[in-house]
Image (cartoon, rainbow, N blue to C red):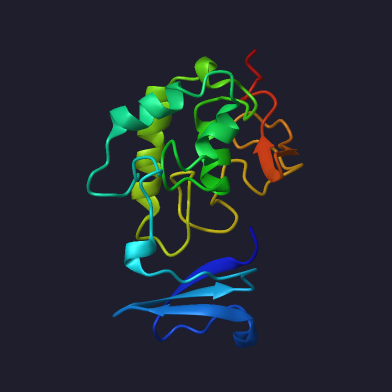
Length: 188
């Protein structure tokens, strides 16, 4: 995955250089800008097939039971991979994946069957709902400030906010993972 998406109010100055913008989507009160995107593929609505996606955490037809069932079918797979798989539940990216694993006390490499999936689904919904209208994401329940926005994500070699152990950074199938070795023991 290349590039990043930023949202701004219509009057707000962009935080990235204009020449790196590849896509600009304007709405009545906001602008979404895709910066340094590797590629953009525009499709017509009738060409779009989204049937493979899992339940949308922020969609009007959210179905927590279906999300739990899809995750349950991933036996033996690391929870950190199952959460990023949009066929299970749609809307979780790498930041939320890392934060959810911390909040449930699971190492991202722990097998799906070792995790309380009901709690995972419920927390995922709460996290995304709490952040859907925020300008800056916060998963800690505190103010959305850069120094207090996450439990583990982006905090490698910093003390855990709960126990003081140093947050570790690793990689899982090409994506960075962050975890506290004490709060998130690997369950085998």
